Length: 132
Image (cartoon, rainbow, N blue to C red; front, side, top):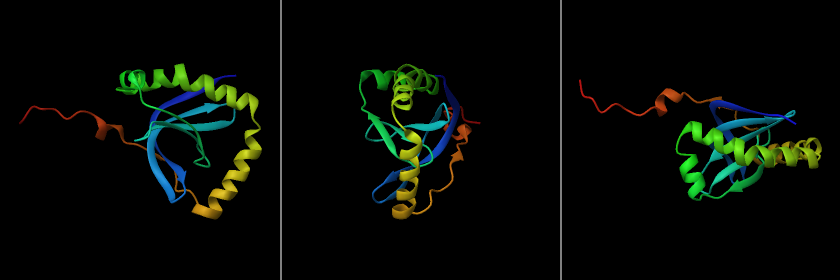
């Protein structure tokens, strides 16, 4: 089974009890399933894209702090730690049925999910310290 990581940052919507919460991260596709991997205050949250359903949270530690300091490091972290876990989840679970149930539940309790947006990465570039 193969996974594809999209290097483009996106603004995803995560499902919480009190509504949809935005989070910026990368998309990982495994088979026909899409997942978001977003750093948040609580850790690196892995969610299913169409439902905002949380799959797992990877807590912060020395490895995440070191690897995820840059975009390239974050993509390496996803490749090393997240992709194998997502592949095992897709292989073992009937995600299609679970996702359909979660979409219905999320729309009923939270309303329709806002659209996923591309993030303009130029605003994230470091600002030059040179004064003109």
